[in-house]
Amino acid sequence: MKRVVIESPYAGEVERNTNYARACMRHSLDRGEAPIASHLIYTQPGVLDDTVERERLQGIQAGYEWMYAADFVAFYIDLGWSPGMLRALKMARILHKEIATRQLIDSVVYPIPKDVQELFDR
Image: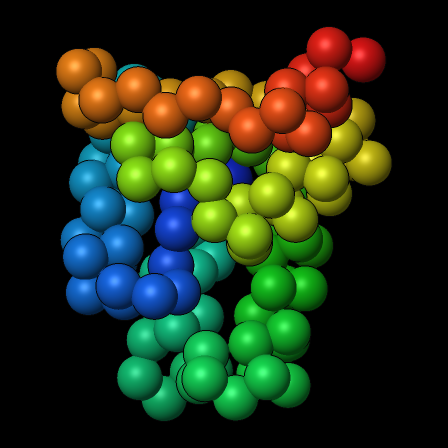
């Protein structure tokens, strides 16, 4: 099994985004992968509070640490690219990680923002 970091939106519409991230995890598992989605793990009640900036940053950094061990990073883009996903993309590039973009809903296409596409073109 390949170890994969799952990146998808979290902030904003938290309930919708949490349900989406769970579906992304299932999709990855169904592909025979071993996924981790730090934004699902660290935001559980009693772990970290995403509305407290210090705790939010602590969770982001912990997620980046898992990226070191991952075989690749999968960005699920049905809901577009969130600012957190864009930061994770930069980190994945710094770490020279393989990057995949995925969609659960094939009929909905969100283009990669120009500044993000430039990262892929390098």
